[in-house]
Length: 306
Image (cartoon, rainbow, N blue to C red; front, side, top):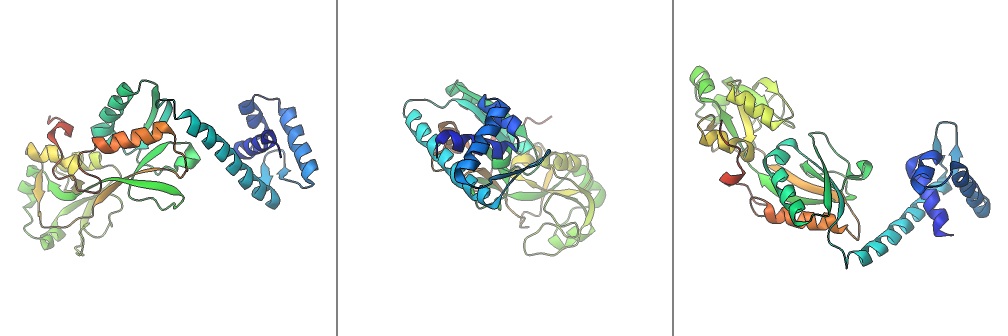
């Protein structure tokens, strides 16, 4: 089997299209189609079932593709291993991350990284949606919570405790809860994956009056600041408002779930230098040791109080 044949076949499968594969390879579509036909003829098997709209691998084609893909990865890793001995981090670094983490922390860190390594370009998406780094071609996906996909590498960045907070105005109108049982009569602002029926307390089942649920911790903080209810907010997002007297921490004895942040990336024996170098830089820049709670957040990382 020639490497050219393996490359052409692999690109066709991954692009789901002869046309797109040809564009990526800088070849004519007719040439790509002919090379696949000759490959099937030489092997004496059908690798792809073709229709006017779709390409679908046959069973033997799937097995052949998996071997070809591994060969391509091994070949790319061999070249990469040699090149990395002489090159600094360079190229496009694609990262996705939670909105608040990007706004409060990672923008500054990435900027400093790019200052030190000027050959790096970056594309960053701040998002709350789940991201599959393999499917979306992302180098590093920073996610809340450990991913379920065991084929990915998940490196814990840090943990952040949550605490119950409310505005002075809310407490003046609704009273201050003095025990977790008192929360049953208070208005709740909830975040995923909080239950809509109970306060997010470890070891407790205290019914809540849900008035607001949202998937963004900054939104929940702003709603709490406006007096909508009590919210269980991560330290990183609530510390500045508490110090400024805009929020009041409630029931410090209450135990809330820990928010964990992971850097997730594809499992490869050779990791691109840009990815490895940035992950190491990120870990050195984090406000707290790996796996420890951010308590308290360094003042330099906090947004200014309005």
